Each structure stands twice: as structure tokens, then as C-alpha cells.
Image (cartoon, rainbow, N blue to C red; front, side):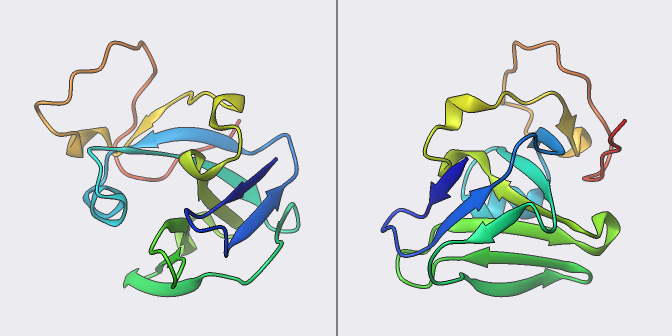
Length: 132
């Protein structure tokens, strides 16, 4: 699967299958993406590539790095030391964001009270998830 930022300067490629596809409700993801929640896919290192200019990175909190296109500002990735060896790409940046469906809500305790969800996906507390 491939994806890109808004202006197309940063492009990436990921091998399938991916490790996970989850909805995140944490404040940091909400702020980075300016959205009430975001959906990301986890990809093991070695199973993804930058096809063009890599994005700029920002250490948003201890042990967490986020990236963005320095031309158009599109959020691109999130990486946490707690989930080492995995890069998380935002599903909305995929060329075909319909290719994946989330299977879990993470950091559900931070969900905005006015966000009404009608799915039956399981929830976890905190941003970490465990792959079975």
C-alpha cells in the first residue's frame, strides 16, 4: 500500500499485512491531527519505506516521535519506544484509506465526551496495544 502527504512531497510504501489498524483517542494524536480521534496502522520496521523526501520529526513527549511534511504540514507518523520496531502511519494518508478497517479503540479513556461512536470495537486504556 502507498500513501502521501497533502502536497505529495512525502510518499511512503508499506508491505501488507500490517501489524494493526486502530483508532486512537489520546490527546497527543488529537492535537497532531487536529481531529477528535485518528486512525493509524502499525507496520514493523523493514516493512515500510519512504519513497521520496522523508518527513521532519518532532519529539512530542518522552519516548515518542511524530513526523510531518515540512512543506504542507500533513501529519505522517507516530513512533513510541513502548512499541519499538513499529512505525505508525495515519490511515487517512493512504492512497486507498478504505483498504483497512480499525479493529480496536486505544486510549479510550481520553475519548471526547461528545464523540458518538456506533461501532462495537473493543477498547483499551492507554495508547499501547498488543498484537496477538
